[in-house]
Amino acid sequence: MTDFFQNKSPVIERLKTYGFSEQDGILAYHVRILEGEFELTVNILPTGEVKTRLLECELGEPYTLHLVEEAGGEFVGRVRAAYEAALEDIAAHCFEGAFFKQPQTERLLAYAREKYGSDPEYLWEKSPDNAVLRRKDTGKWYAAVLTARKKSLSLAGEGKVEIVDLRADPAELSALLDGERILPGWHMNKKHWISVPLDGRVPFEEVASLLDKSFLLAK
Image (tube, rainbow, N blue to C red):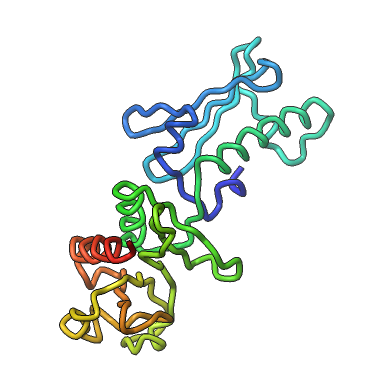
């Protein structure tokens, strides 16, 4: 089961459209499989963790053999195939790639989705921890969420940092750039783009405000 949801996070709006209902912060979905012989319950916890339960309807008892790798036989195989097909469909329709680790990155993506209806586009197969956001009306990018080495950004420390590249008014660039919180656009035209680390050094409200301005500049 875990393979279907590995490196993915649930999208609440898609889950509700799919048929999930929310109660006490848990999203639940019930579906009959194998011509109604079994009822599958899928619960999405607030942490994003997926829990499932399979009930054999005629007996009214939980069924677990489909989770035992060593369990064989034609019947178990059919149950397992139907169970996995249901989960695979949920993963495909209700989850998206979750390759970013910083809470501020996830919060910014959620903000863009809620305010502008933008879902991240993962354009580079070899770089799954890079994504772009674009306006639906113009098709232009207004943000690129990227993972970069600190050294390549001239930042102190080792390792990588998640950043967002945003459009900026050229007339305001000199006042924005400080070499630590707001940087020249990484891999972008530095006359029109800035980079903001998403490790918390810049308050989220300020990052969101810069994102809003970038969205307007992408007309």
